[in-house]
Length: 160
Ligand SMILES: [Zn+2]
Image (cartoon, rainbow, N blue to C red):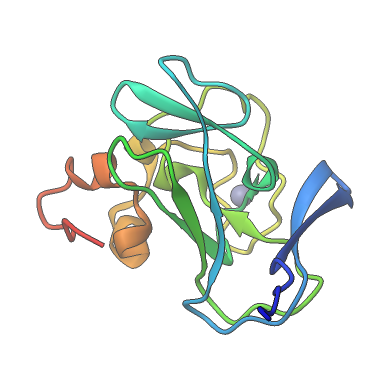
């Protein structure tokens, strides 16, 4: 008899529409979710960029991840691969919203014209793409910068 573990993530209505929340406490470095989607040449409202000319329109639950300039999660995105993974960047408490920094996978942002609403102390003021991400943030994210973007930075780590 096998034990079925509950998914560590949950999608429910929050202040910004559907959002992704932690269902359980998880230590930093935990794998929280693995997700696929549909590959497209076009960026969509719910896609992540997986290569210079490829976007993955994500399946639930990860299609509802919101941006934060100081996120508690990172996505591991390997060049051209359609399975992406969500990891905790810090200790996560049950009930917290899970967020990622869109600049870790989008070279430029196509669908966020207004100011950033993340509320983080280090908020950059608007949702920026990788091309506008400060180099200290790139270094801090390490392997959680998508592989196709890491290739643009000679000093960044090459493999996960
Ligand atoms: Zn922000």
